[in-house]
Amino acid sequence: MSPTAVLYVAQAIHGLAYGMLLFLVASGLTLIFGMMGILNIAHASFAMLAAYFCFQVLQMTGNFWAALLIAPVFAGICGVVTERFLLRTVHKHGHLAELLITVGIMALILEIVKLFWGTESLVVKIPPSLSGLLNIAGLTYPVYRLFIIGVSIVILGLMALILYKTRLGKIVQAAVSDADMVSALGINTPLVFMLVFGIGIWLAGVAGAVAGPLLTVFPGMADQLGMDAFVVVVVGGFGSLLGAFIVALFLGELNAYGIQFIPRLAPVLMFAFMALVLAFKPMGLFGERE
Amino acid sequence: MRNKLYKWILWGVVVILVAILPRLVNFYYLNFFIAFAIFSLYAVTLNLLLGYMGVLSFGHAMFFGTGAYATALALTHIQGFPLLPAVLVGGLAGGLLALMLSPLLVRVSGTAFAMLTLAFGQLIFVAALKYREVTGGEDGIGGYPIPPLNLPGVLSIDMTDKINFYYFAIAVVAICLYILWFYTKTPFGSLVVGIRDNAMRMDYLGFNLPQTKAINLTVCGAFAGIAGAVHALLMKLVSTVGVLDIHTSFRPIVMAYVGGVGSFFGPIIGSGVLHILEDVVIRFTERIGLVNGAIFVLVVLFAPMGLVGLFRAAKEKWFHKGNAS
Image 1: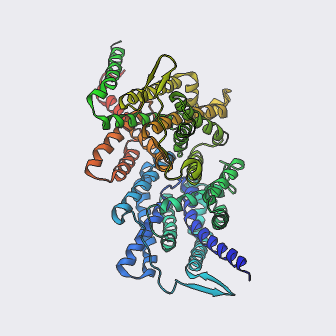
Image 2 (image 1 turned 90 degrees about the vertical axis):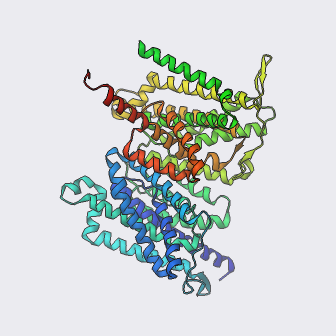
Image 3 (image 1 turned 180 degrees about the horizontal axis):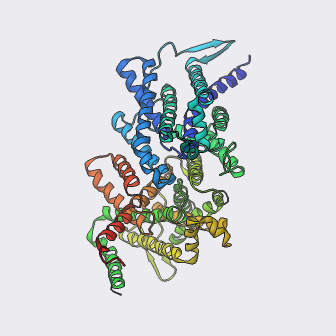
């Protein structure tokens, strides 16, 4: 294979890895929005929190796998507490208040992170079994990126299985389309909401913990990951999982190739794409009309 | 009658206090007061959308920042650009941006509006960050001249003098606030509130909703732009992270909420409270963000109508017992 083709394939893999990460964050975001009508501005902040947890656990135990398992769970617990004690309290004041409280949480997480870990970038060391390059059919890939893609696929497969094949998944699907009706049928929707919020944050936490070694862990991480995931949800259509999946992969590739060919314009490209989509479809590509 | 007299006395005291402030405090607090005034105007424009039209602008910094950049660019590139046009250019730029975005923004409401404004705010932030030739990127634009206030043939006031600039900035903000206050009292202002309360009814009454929303957006954008322009003159430096970033968008939201979104003067009170708070907190700890965030969360949780709402509730409770009529 020619060197240019190798470069193209490598960029494609980069894009795929980042797109998968984006979808891990965006899927929770879009599920929460679809069910509860809350745009969780703090979503990526929880991902960042998980990345810091991951760093901390790694430092304390020295075991990357343990850190990868524990950190998202901690983040998920934080999410459940947030839902139970903050979001549910302001629920009676309407969606705007819920949106604003997540803004406050975002600011608080940012400050707490700075308070405990400082403002400099922290490097998460990956174990030797995941570092290095893998040689397949004459092409070399960084193993860690392949690992990210693998982890994402496994988790998304599990999620799809739960969502489409179990009773809980049916309830969640029903609650996305009409929460009041589900509640009237005698299902404890507040509990379902809490669970979905926790799982959504856990997904974001997995993305954050996995992304730690890739992006390094720093306080601006939430802004970077958050804005991209947010674009995914807006363009894909509010509350649409399929839309989020397609757009996340597309944006991942757009980002990767954009950085290769027009490095200066890459971030603008993404927002320009969003503006273009919204000009014709205000509710996103796969969103339903309000 | 007595109530009206009190009001006039109150306004008189405020005007006199503002007028003699330069004699009472040092330059630090003079600048502090100007910053408070600028952010009051900025937060009021946000509240015209949030409290009056019922939509949350998450990217309000794009109007503020565009105004600031327009003024800074005009002063940098055009030799001898006069002062008042410089401020007006800021307003014009903010208004123009709002007008350009309005065809998209008037079609949505609620969360979608918040998301769209956030998205466009970020688009403009990133674009400004990347176009270094024009905007200076993260370093921003600085070192532009501050022109004197010129009335041809009559007088010329040096604006590099701190006290002169203080009076100028306060006058600009006060005039803008008065115009906006008057604007909310016009039939058009009532129409905007009507859209918030019952859009469908306003539609059936024959009012043109998209047009009304677009005009209100443009007004808000223009005055936010003026606030940005005065900010550019005060700071003598405009940089993306200072005027266009997401935290510049969130600050007026916090101010409006702390003060009270339902009332015209709420955001002004909120701006004052937050500025004083920041000034006090910074003496004890550097974690201003933590304190601000905590206060914001508490206000949204327990006092959704802000300080003005609390004050009204207290007044209701203590003064209208017994003789409720």
